[in-house]
Amino acid sequence: MIGARLRAAPALLALGLGFGPGPAALAQTQLPSRGAESAPERLKPLIGAWDLEAVGKSRRCTVTLAAETGQHGRLVRFPATCRRALPILANVTGWEVTRAGQPRLLDAEGREVLAFARLASESGLEARGSDGQAYRLDPKGYVRAAPRPAESAAQTAAQAAQRRTVVDLGTAPDQASLPGRYAAMRQLNREACRLELREDGVAALSQGCGDTGLAIFDPAGWRYAAGRLSLVARRGHSVELVFEQGHWRKDPNVGAPLMLRKLP
Image (cartoon, rainbow, N blue to C red; front, side):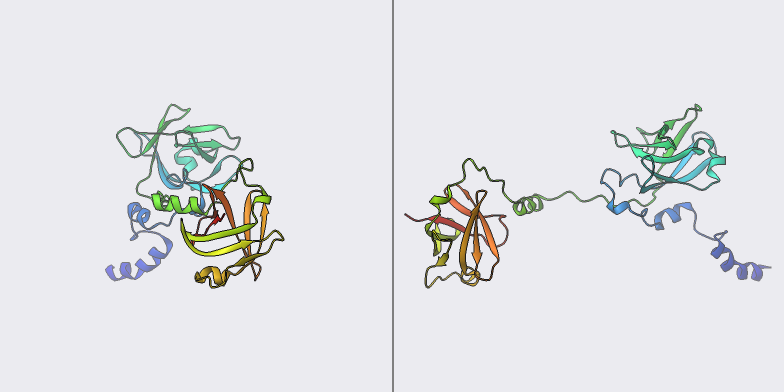
């Protein structure tokens, strides 16, 4: 008899009957709900499986607040047997998040069925149904998508540096003032070599420029539009500069710095 039960165990496991891990173990091994990683940050703590129970009664069911959008809000999924165990779910098809960051369940017409609020002393959420019954939504350790970590000050600064500067055309230099000789700098007030911008749109480095990067870039022309000065390399690529605090600065300010100060 014992041998027969042991031989039957693999088949039972394959069918999901008996001998398997309990709900708590399953919750720990589940993957996050499909689409959760790309959902808005405020939804990530809510997307996934929850245990919904009628408070004070033995009736409960596992519902999934899905990431996919439906006719009203996002989809809600649960086994068909849930409609018998918890009749209030009979018309539930969707969910959305309130301004307070809590979920509410909706019917097919978009009407509210259950609006949950966080319990003061527990980790779950609770709502009062139209039937007068209290319902609790408990996370039970189900897997959630990880929220995006807060950006460090260095990451914020790096992202800001990659954005193009908005130019105030009212204070931008006039194009007629641009031709002339410039000190090209990697650090403010430390000349690396000299550059000439000619009236015909030609640009030329001074002979013997010791800055390897500028020599490789080899500026051959320049353009000016919308308050932005563009140096054009002999091979056709370009770099833009904006005018601030008496000199021109490469913009966006990423990679090796470049500044130009006009010489008298």
